[in-house]
Each structure stands twice: as C-alpha cells, then as structure tokens.
Image (cartoon, rainbow, N blue to C red; front, top):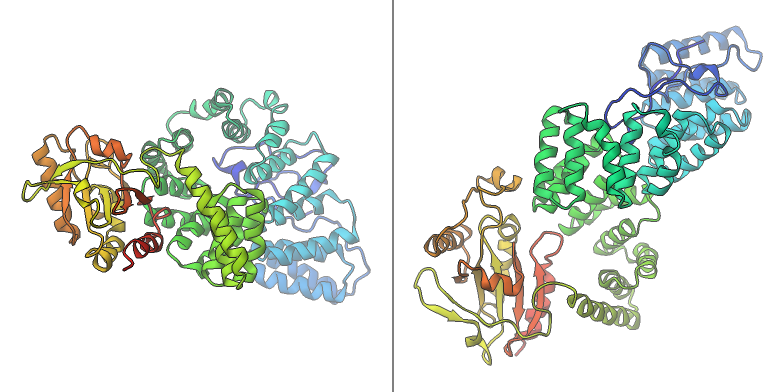
Length: 574
C-alpha cells in the first residue's frame, strides 16, 4: 500500500507547527495511519490494493505510471494520466481519488472536489474519501461545506481526536467559538500537552469573553518559553485588550522569528491598521494571503483598505473570498456591497445591501450604501428614504461619542498663532463665515496622510470657509511608542515639554506638509483637545452660527473627503 497521509493542513490547528497526535481512529481505513514521511494529510495516494474493474495491460501500465508521477511530485503529469484513466474507466474509484489528490497539490481545489464527489457516489460512506473531500472544501475556502463534511465524519467517529480537531479548526475559522468549546473542552483533560488544542480552545474562550479560562489554556503554550508562538500569543492578548501599539511590538518580534507562521501576518496587519498604518497593513494582509488565501481577516482587511482607496475592482476579489469563507458575516456583506456600489455594479450590490440593512437596521453606513444603490438604479424615492434614515441614525450615534456633537455649539477657544504670537478666537468667525477645524500633530500618520485631501478642499473652499489647524499633543512621540509608518518615513519626535517647543512642532508641521492655512497651538494642559475629544486627529466643519455640521476622525477608513466637501458646498452656497 502506498504512503498514507499524516499531517493536518495549514490552519488554526497547526498555527504553531506543534506535534499533533497523528493516529486516527481504527474505523478510518488503515491508509490513514501515520508513516515516517511528513506528507500532507490531504495527499492520499492509492489506498485500494487492486483496481475495482478488470483492466487491460495498457491501462495497468498507465495506472502505474500515474502513481510514479504522483509519488515523484510531478502532479501536473499525474493529473493528466489519471484524467485519461477516468475517461477509460469512469467507475474506477481509485483513479478519481488520486486525480483529486493531484489536483489538490496543484491548488485546483474545485476540480478536486468534483473528483472526490464522484468517488463518494461510486463508493458511498467511505471515511477515507469523506476526509479528503472535507479537507478539499477547507482548502478551497468553502468552510461551510467543509464544516458540514467534518460534522458528518465526526458523527461516524466521534472519539477520533484528529477529526475532532479538524472540525474545531473549521468552527474557529468561521467564528463559531461556542462549538469549538463544545468539541474541545471534553477532550482537553485527555490531552494536556496538545498545544494545538490549547490554542484553539484558549482563543475560543477569549473570543467569548471568558478571559481567565482562555488565558489558562494559552499559558500552556507560554510555559514553553520565549518563542514565535509565545510572542504571537502575547500579541494576540494585547490586541484583544485593545493595546494595539503593544500588539504591534510583540507581533513584529514574532515575525522576526518566523514570518511564515500562519495567521501571524493577518493579526499583524489588523494591529497595524488600528495604529494608523494602512500601507503596512495591506502588505501584511497580502503576505498572509500568499500562503493562506483562506484567512478571513486578511481578506476582509485588504478589501476594506482597497475600498477606502476606491480601488473597487481589486477589492472585490478578497471581499468575495471573505464572504465565501463566512457567508453570514454582515461585515463581509457590507464591504462587498460598498465595493460593488463604488464600481457602479448596483444590481449586484442591491441584494447584499438590502441584506445588511435587514440584519443591521441601526447602522447608518448600511442605509447610506443602500441609498447609493437605489440612486444608481434610479429608484429616487427609495434612495431618499434610506438617506434620511442614515442621517437620522448618524445624529443618534453622535450622542454616544465623546466630544461635541453635530448641531451642537462648538466649544469656543482662544489660542496663539505660533508664528506671530497673535491669539485667535473661534467665536470671531461667528456671523461671518463657516470654519473648518483640523486637529492633529506631525507625528500622527493619519493626519499626514489626510493632508493632501485637506489642502485640496482648502484651495477650493478656503476663501469662503477658512481652514485652521489646531496643533495638539504628539500622537506617536519617540518616548512613548513610534508607529511603524513613522519609522518607515523617518518621523521621530519627542513630546513637547514647553509651549515654545510645541509651537516649534506646529511651525515645522505646516512647513513640511505645505499647509495653505494657518495654525494655532493648544496649551500644555490640552484643554481644547479635550473639549473636542480630538486626539490623535479629527476634523470639524462649523457653520457661521458656530454650530458643528460635520465631524470625522482622520483615519483612512473614516475620513471621506467627498462627505466633507458636500457639507462645505452646502454651507458656502451663495
């Protein structure tokens, strides 16, 4: 009999390249028993002792040649030979299975699934075929189908740890943490040294908010000392706690040890995105997808960035993959609807946008996207209705955010110009013109990234609505933590210790960014920054009556210049 499979696929289950019990329940065929070779579990070779059908000498010779090609690693030639065999003998289970194995090795998962399904019809209920078929679904990113197949297999062999771990891995990837706990918690006492199990169960507990139990399982991995796995887990803990700068440091250290660790680049990208470095985040997501195209978070994150940059066509590929991985994900549906809408594919976007509104009726973004879809389909009444709902929800959401709200009076202040020293009072604009307040510091990468769009708006509307930079404390000072983007761009600034030093920072900022509007400097007490809840960067449009009409954070995913322009156009209309 040929070599049998003995290793799980790259997924959550093997994130740490840990030793997993490779024995399989005796009810699975003997072909699944481990051997000394580290061949992929999915690479099941000939597992029947003889062909099912009488064959000619030429056919036997072709079959032997196909096996030799497969064992030598020439999967393309092996697939071609097996394809000939299935044409000659369409009922030969062996040929279909091994054709599927070769196609998997070539990354042609959908074709492999077809072959395994054919074999399953010819030889129903064979657990070896069932296992390969489930793994092929998993490899293809069709996790819902993979989960169903593994569940069926788990029913047949409920006490087989490998099948249980593979099933739990699917549930972890699809976000069903409760099922992961149900599957693995009974198994945990029997396998105290199984670190793959500890990782999956620990992460499931963390995701469900059971921090003590989650940490108890993850501590099993941390007890092994400093390693890429330990760094990954420390970074994961910090990310889950919302300490993104610390998570970046730990994950960066893990990457130095092993940049190919599955899911490490994905989490690193998410942490980078939360610290204002979408360029590095996109690069990390792409690296993850190059080795693991079925990572949900990397597909979703990359799609979000591309959509924010209006690269709609490119965004659709990862977003469609994310939705394939988690069809019930409202976030994936929402992002794909946005990308399709941006690409003017309104008919395709409509069912997604309507589904998101149905699932998340309190989301202003969902109603706004649906309004754009209806407008694109020339459904004016429906578009107007959805836009009105979005605006109403926006106003309601403002009440729960820190800082002044839309339609409230903007807090007055008087701050000095760093060049002239002359003090400027916000209320001096009242009754005259609208004014745009930009809060930021040079060490804030999001503020620097938004500068070009803000300058264009200032050039167009600045004569009728003056722009003003309010310089606040540094977002990423060198004595606290420096963002990866700052390090890459050579931006390193210590915190200002005096007002004069802060004024110097403001002058350098306006000079380096070539800002066409003046600056004022907040005091060392940060009173104005606190009044506007403006750190690390934020923008406000204030009308001539002193009321706030628009506000936004300046992150790449939050700041939409066209939205600010729509407000300015309305306020400056003759």
